[in-house]
Length: 212
Length: 144
Image (cartoon, rainbow over all chains, first blue to last red; front, side, top):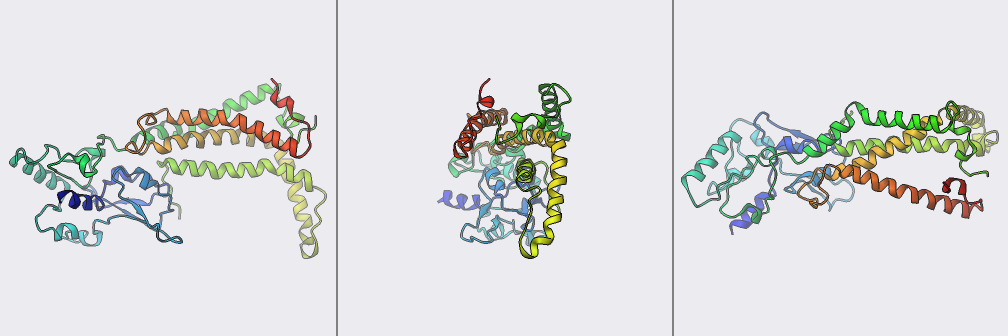
């Protein structure tokens, strides 16, 4: 019973902008309301439909409109952006929840509430606020009485998941130093292999079609 | 409008492939020039394009004859870049990748396997071309 409700909210989850703003090649993901992020929105006018965000998200939140063959869009919970961007706005899920299983607020306030619940109900919950540190902190925070893996929340590192790829990219390609170095090295090899000075295209062996 | 997220691995792959495709077109240009230079003879109303096309072929061929070495090296560099980046492409999803492959040297593994496949591909392509066009096998390339 509890599982299904949590599973439902898994689909509405919103990861923190810091973790997910990275993947799209067109920069379609925008974080909203810093410094206390309420999740992120997809700017559909920038989206090129690469679906790299779907690969990147460990919670499998962004989904694609596969039923629309011509103009499918990437879809995701907007965290009721229009409502919460107004003063005192509460997203639909939190507003409708009859038992305050879902509550809405600033992330720092919610962390306090979650830790208070853990402290005041010893033994009821697993002593962990899921999302506090996972992938650098998510916008949805969970406390649970069953192990988080059972409710499809994967075990995650405290570093944002695109960090490794980003580090590799930045160290390899900052100022394009490695391609330029490779270009230079291959140029030197080519220059040497042709006895210096002589253009490689002068050699008949390089001409395709191969006259013998 | 330009929306470039240079932090994205997929952006780099896309850029490399796009530039590489153009490099390939340019590398193929001399073959087109060799075939049609001095022989452009379009029928009907297209005949007025003859001189322009002739000039493009002649000038392009002359420029590429001097600069082909740049394109040849560029082709290798760009291939290295996007073939290795295809490896880092998957590193963004540690929970979906098998632990065996979640390693910082995955780009290197991709690059090595791409190089390993590259040589057989050249042999295959050369054999295909030389047998279908009745040319002598290019043993001078294959032999050490």
